[in-house]
Image (cartoon, rainbow over all chains, first blue to last red; front, side, top):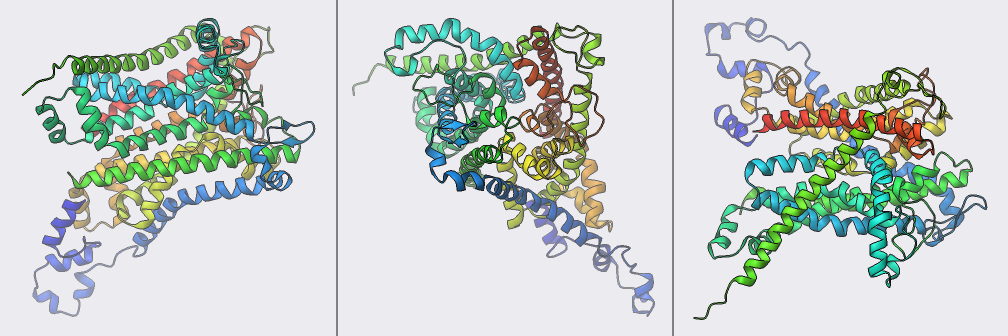
Length: 352
Length: 281
């Protein structure tokens, strides 16, 4: 863009030419014709649709504005439908554990708890893995291998959520029940985190599957961040005799920290709202339990499971209130991640 | 000057490099594990009836998911028809007109945020906006939700593709006296054609595997699609219903449907990625 603009400024002055009329004026040599009164009719043809350009521009602009409007519409609609629930329960909706459609008592605490815990497990697993994968792709693997592996990791993001759910329920959860959970319970059973019967489904399984799902998002952005670090900076550290790990830990990561945090927030946003995979394996019970083996619930899975069953207006309103909470959380996380990533790219486009 | 022997540092470096390699292979293992599971279990479900017959009650042989395949195709097509023109126009504004404008910046930001919104939230939105006023679960509402999910994807890829078109092309068209709208639609779009097509395909792939918003909007139905104003059969909700059922033959059908969707999406994704890479390099 910049190049074209500069070129035009040199050649024709000011703005790019918008219509034929102006170009003609610049390019035509003055002739006898120009002095004749017929010049306006002969030399300069009137444009067929003079309003077409502003119209087209306005049309595209209004479509562009539609996107932020949609977000505002989503927010206001969720707010509108969840008002009855908030009116009935007040702010105690957020801290009440009670969720009983029969008595009409609803509280979001167990769902919020489940969302946070499963996301936390996912982040603990996914962040170190993604950083290591990015390190592998950028610093260690030869270019061809790096490209192939990078593409395959990104393919993880293309697999639909429901497929993760199927795999989690029928393949991964039985494995957890038979091998992983008994071992964890045997060795770490003193902690309340790892007590209880090994059911296979539950918070831990959901967290692990979430980790696999957000892995490609975090590692893709982190890889970009690693690649954007100017080679000079890295090479000077290598020149001083630093090892690959030291360069990464002391040069690359501090240099791209903003971007890496942005990438983590991006993954966080995904994990918070992931629905189908979690619904399959989390167990769907409105209870807060200290054990990671126990079945739980997340906001998204509660919505997925109960929305079609809900008939009472208050029930529906409470579910939509859950949706509103999820909206506010993910919106905040997304905005933070966008601001961080944007700040990084902007700072780096200027150069070192 | 005393020197420290570097063994400790070297060991740490080696273990980190090993860890990096292991992490990358863990990611690959997950990918291949999931894909092979789906292929092996899903392939058993494939037969002639699977693609041509209506669902049968559990235990009754010869059932299929033909109505759901058709329903998913219709829903996706409708969503594409709605989202692609709007998304492309928005993308044109971002890429062609408003590079520095505040509105464009705002819209780009919003598109990124909307892309990260959980699809189930979009589902709740469509529920409140269409299902409640219309009084019935419907295919229209499902297609609307899918369109909302597609919109930011189409708009951002359009912007990227339009920006890849060299400026000299625009200038030569403008110099010939073409108005801006013709330059954009006739010249820039033609130059970016393959990129735009892959962007749309990518968005279609993404949307066709969506389940969460359809669960309580389009619902599901065991019959042929007769009207979009009624619950509409679709593959993903069929997978959910069948997988959660206790019947082995239904679960097998769920695997079959999973394979169908996974194959379609992976094929499109790999193809488009390949084209996009060619384009960018």
